[in-house]
Structures are given as C-alpha cells and as structure tokens.
Image (cartoon, rainbow, N blue to C red; front, side, top):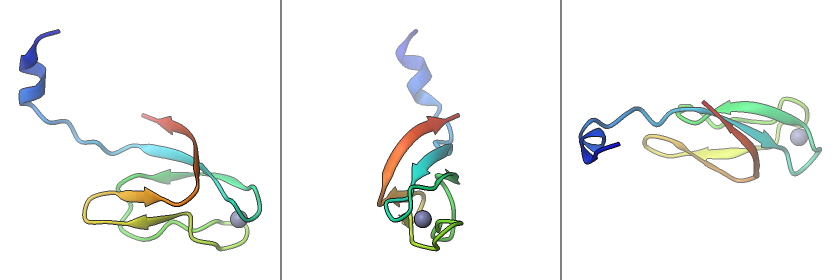
Length: 65
Ligand SMILES: [Zn+2]
C-alpha cells in the first residue's frame, strides 16, 4: 500500500469479454492481441489493434484477469 508499487510496471494484458454489436455473440478477447479480434459468429471486427493493446469497438461485458 505504498507508492513503491508504482515503480514496477505490471503487464497490463488481460482478457476482455466483448459482446458483438452485430449478433450479440459474447467472446473473450486478449487485450494485447496482435490481430484484430473478430466475432466468431458473424466475423465483424470487435476491436482495433494499436501498438500495445486493442481498442474495443463494442461493449466490454467484463474484464478478466
Ligand atoms: Zn457477431
């Protein structure tokens, strides 16, 4: 519970549970994915990748550690 914790950056990768806006399918997506995650059901893009993490284009249901 000290500021010392901030000295060591932890990897900020995690899984996100996203809901497809097109068909309502829910699936887990890795936040540091190197490719655009697509809906497994209707193939629409769920998020865009950036240098280090994804930007979700759809609703995040839940963040998973
Ligand atoms: Zn879909």
